[in-house]
Amino acid sequence: MTIEADPPARPGVEAAAVGGPAGEELAWVRRAQAGDADAYDKLVRRYQERIYSTIYHMTSNHEDANDLAQETFVKGYQALHSFKGDSSFYTWLYRIAVNKTINFLKQRKNKAFLSLNDLDLQAEHDPDLVALVCERTPRRAAALAELQERLNAAMQKLSETHRMVVVLHDIQGLPHEEIGAIMDCNVGTVRSRLFYARQQLQAHLSDYLKPGHECS
Amino acid sequence: MSAPEHDFEALRRLLALKRHETPPPGYFRDFPDRVAARIAALQAAAPVSWLERFGLLLRPAAVCGCGVLMSALLTGALVASRAQERQRHSFLLASEFPAENGREPAPVPMNLADVPASVAPVLPGTSPFTQFIPSARRANFNVMLVGR
Image (cartoon, each protein chain N blue to C red):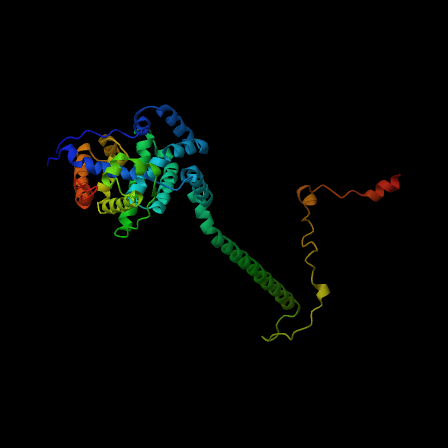
């Protein structure tokens, strides 16, 4: 297996995980541990989008993601006393979200029901995405919506752990090491899972990934 | 197992579509409040300690037990007092009308005025004043008044 370069992380993700406002965050955590609800509110505001998005991409269902994201933060609050600072708060919280989501999906087995969020307006102008659908089609939005559905259906065919690696790396932009810490496995396992998951996705989405598909 | 990076390039561009899936507008504005409400609801619903939970579980049983115990004590006291009274009456009758020739004496109507009342002192010296200080006597206030 070729060692791949990590994709550029999404803005703010690494800063919060590694350095940046880590001191401020730790102060919020300590205050929240002492029972300060406002401090925990700040932590929720900081991580709500990332936690929700990760769960949403795993479940492909907005309602389930909403419930699980809330449960993650409630569980985080209840277990706050057990946070010793061995890892970043961000990694610790992600671990709760990942475990909750994987347990939920195992219980829901074979009963996946897609409830997809709408695409934002920028999607229609994203050159990478426009290249995947016919640039000249007057129904670009409809083509993108169809592509979105196919993509989510293909994602749901992966096992929970393989899907999680794809979500955390290719969608959320986390580095392999961070994913290993979150999923409690080594970097080699993360890389091999990612490779296998991409192969599976490529097979499921081959129609869209063929060269010259765009305007055929 | 060899896979050049560019093999997955198209797939990675396709996966970028997922980043454009966004929840309804305003969703994240209300999210922290929903989390706070769930935390508050959990805190209000949960008992503080196992001891309290144990107490709550035992409370109905304890109330029932106390009720049964009190009833038993009252019934016991009533039965005992009746038995004592009956025993005292039979003793008085036996001492006034002893059995003749082995036969039970005919019942005689009892004069209740002869029976000492329960409020009359049984022993003359039961007053704590005279019991513990034998030399003490009641003050004779009449003498004092006469002396004037």
